[in-house]
Amino acid sequence: GAGVSQTPSNKVTEKGKYVELRCDPISGHTALYWYRQSLGQGPEFLIYFQGTGAADDSGLPNDRFFAVRPEGSVSTLKIQRTERGDSAVYLCASSLYLSYEQYFGPGTRLTVT
Amino acid sequence: KQEVTQIPAALSVPEGENLVLNCSFTDSAIYNLQWFRQDPGKGLTSLLLIQSSQREQTSGRLNASLDKSSGRSTLYIAASQPGDSATYLCAAPNDYKLSFGAGTTVTVRA
Image (cartoon, chains in turn purple, blue):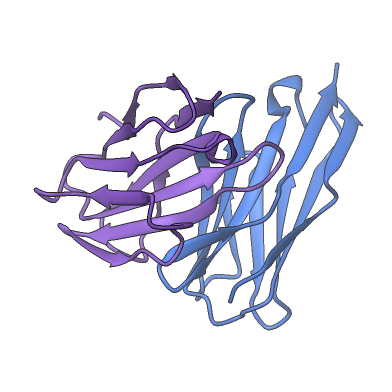
């Protein structure tokens, strides 16, 4: 079956611009997670959803970052007033339920110039 | 807070040699532990998931062990092949989110 998909695969934007990153989880998975990976490091947690609600957003670095999952399936990570330090690979994962095995998408590479 | 450490950071071996990758974690109250593979510029592929009630899990040439009391997991890859060259990451749960190590980058020389 189809895995987790993320669009776009690459995004280049100018400092100060707004970006949206999309994640399509595996069909039927109730939990969805966002992580961010900088070069040479392991992924770092940003936020996760159980259904439509953000169950834990403690990893969001500041209020420029926001994520939604309005219908309990697709999620969008939104970054306002982008900064060069936001450049990273943004990974999305889903699992059937919380605490179950997480399956990752290919990621979106964000470059802020 | 869960802290995960992986040693060594990089490993280079000749083809056919067995690989041993180490992972340590600080909070032993985990319900599972996952090992992932990451190829350059790609996402994470789940290799093995060990439940807290298990001591090891096997898939083909891969075997992962888990010792909760000592806060350690080890990934063994038997008879390595050049196609095994990648970065291997372990992840331990911190509540329902995963805490990752920085990974071990493996190079298998033909």
